[in-house]
Amino acid sequence: MKHTILCFSGTGNSYYVANKLRISFEDARLVMIPDLMDDSTIELTEAVGLVFPTYFFLPPPIVAEFIETVLPRLDFSPVQYFYAVTTRSLWGGWTHSITDILLRNQGIALSYASSVRFASTYIPLFTAPNIMQIEFYYKHAEQKILKIVQQIGNETIRPPFRPMFTRYMLEHKMDKSFEKTKKSAQASFVVTPACDGCEFCYRICPTGNIEMVYGKPIFLPNCTGCLACYHRCPQEAITFNRRVSSGHYPNHEAHFQKEYRE
Image 1 (cartoon, one colour):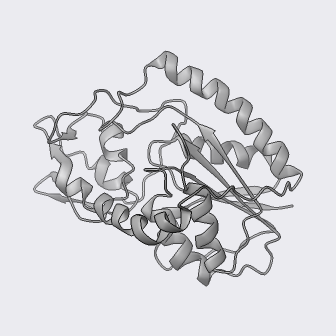
Image 2 (spheres, rainbow, N blue to C red):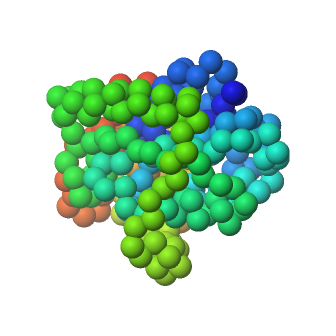
Image 3 (cartoon, one colour):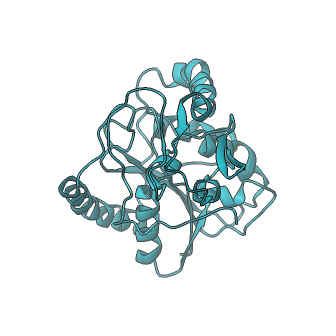
């Protein structure tokens, strides 16, 4: 069975999982979701997987938008098995159940859902993990990924559990959360004098939410909340305008080097 793995990743954890899946299946390709947010299209295969992180116990805004606007224009006739693998730090919340509903609204049945735990990268609430913590999480992630690969390879049917308040979160909270997230970069980020104008943040932003003006980044109101610009800045020149936890998560384990603009 051929696999198409559709991935969104900010700091590399989800990319790491998606790439492990790609390597594990004999005939698989990995496509980054931001590359399909324009008018691009791809041919789907018998098995299709979504791999992405959990943000505020929900799918990221860009993933919800992808499901609602991009998947409907793709030809799903070859697809026999659709699965989702998410990354999370604490509880996965309503991520799987809301993803399931969003897919069902497009006529897509989610056959399997699972998650892999990593250290949190959300600096406004948590201190960045140290090397030992990162190694600990990646060691356990490897074991979980092997189990997921086996289950997907066997075409295991395991639809997501639907926790209480799923409909309430979908109908009353998700859009408000997304709107707050989209404006978060404008509201929260500050560029320090350490910025050397390298434009790396501009190139890696998955939603094109950063523009360069006079050699410095400015933030637009379409952030998806991935914090890639903060964690991956070579000069650590992007910070917050309020007191937050400390540290950065460059995530050398993932070898995530994707850029979306030149």
